[in-house]
Length: 93
Image (cartoon, rainbow, N blue to C red):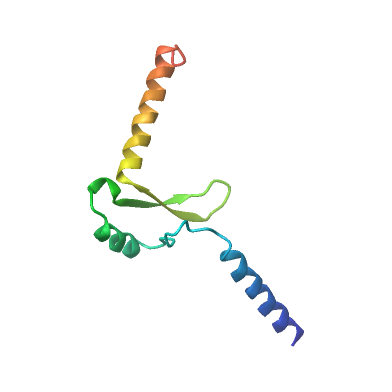
């Protein structure tokens, strides 16, 4: 009986910890169907979410990572600029 009480206490504690994560007013998206539903509500193509499952370094777990199309394009441009700066500085000789 004591083990059941300990397990229930642990479950309640874990649920309380999950509620501490802030969602910034936007619910957490965890599935592709939620992504599709969200994308139906946005106005422009650049605001649509693109989500992938990414391997987390140091663990076998994967996480569902989402970015907007605009963010993805901006990140690609920044990466390209960084590579060009490194080449011009002679890093890749």
